[in-house]
Image (cartoon, rainbow, N blue to C red; front, side, top):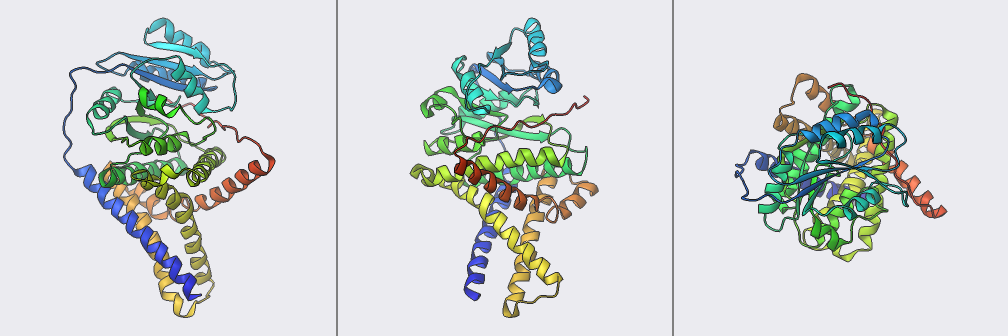
Length: 408
């Protein structure tokens, strides 16, 4: 019992120190002085928007794309993946009014998913850089400019990563918690890793990449459900960096019901389990800066959830009056520190983002007992679905997130 406890506590303290370090580094990076960058000449950029039955948000998205102000040549490509709603009608309406908008019908193909659609989009465009926006995104007017400026001036950069914000954050408790989670990931974890290790992570949307690099990599992995994380690993393995650009913002909607949330996050979990398996078979993923990403995935999708489960067990047994003899004190400390670090990250992110309202602070204080526990369920759901697909030799297909109409 003592040996097992010592191992658990050692892992916990290493994880605690790592996340504490990232928190401090992230805060320092956000408060640090940023150099103003401008270019003499701006490269061509193709904005790729993969879409499948996105009619409910398509008009707002394309209107936002028309609001983009970029000094260079910019074209927007709506990649329609077999939509059966009004997506095509709305997109073609914009092509008649704006020369920069192009409607592209993506042929049927396998496997179904975002990666295949993006690969097709890359095959019919020829810009120097390309930028991905999801079909519900509403970027700021200067987002593309800010991303390009950093991508072309940072050492070894092959692109840049912007910030994703939640447009429906105040709809209900779930969307408020998702918005806070995004703040922690981007404003603490993402900025902390960039400050400490110069390693940024692609976020699936609001991400700029140089075409030469994606061609060197052979395109997107069509079987990767977490295509952003998988591509991040391969890019970093080649020695490139992905600077994090806080001024480059886009707004998107998040799931408003638990059913939609669980389907979306199960897909994310499946994608990251696939990436973990791929990492174990790819030696280059454990070298140099790529090691940071590999360890981050293990800590986020295995160790964190495992320690969360252990802390839950300790709490429940303690509430029912069970003691652990000499192990009682360190286990109680283990649970308390897990809660403390998790909550400090949330409150720090709120302070950095300027969203530390009384309501958000209260939500942050209870997220460990509510929102964080969903990750334990997601891990079991993801592992079950992944093992089942392996046994049946089935390809896990892309599961599209359901959108809702959001008033302007």
